[in-house]
Length: 173
Image (tube, rainbow, N blue to C red; front, side, top):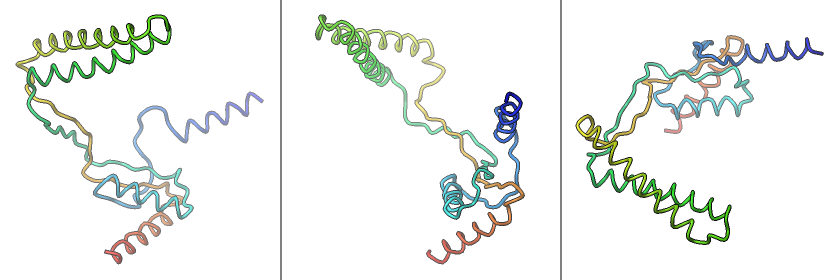
């Protein structure tokens, strides 16, 4: 009994490695966006293709940082106050449930404490780093193209299904 369990566990670990590893398989399609690669895999799944053999690989990854605006004291303080209010309100609601006799007092105190502490710590952090970064941004990891790979045993069938999808898409446009 133990031996069968060990073999099952070992074979499952072989199929889906836990540590970062390079992908395996043959390319069956290449797409400009992740959305297109997802649509290709959806098409394969709808055609009863064994999608557990499929991997989407982002090729030539880039970190893209989009600048959202300038950072200023007023923007930092308002942002810190809003996030502090949300956290403080949550904390106040939890405290009011634990002690119903406190009523609204625990909600109001939680809200006020959340705003005060978050604004204070936000201001200290902003003052310490003010000259290092004067803007707000969002980072995103993107790839220049997305390849769909399949294990060799099903690669030819996958290529044919994706070629049919591409032909149908070209005909509809």
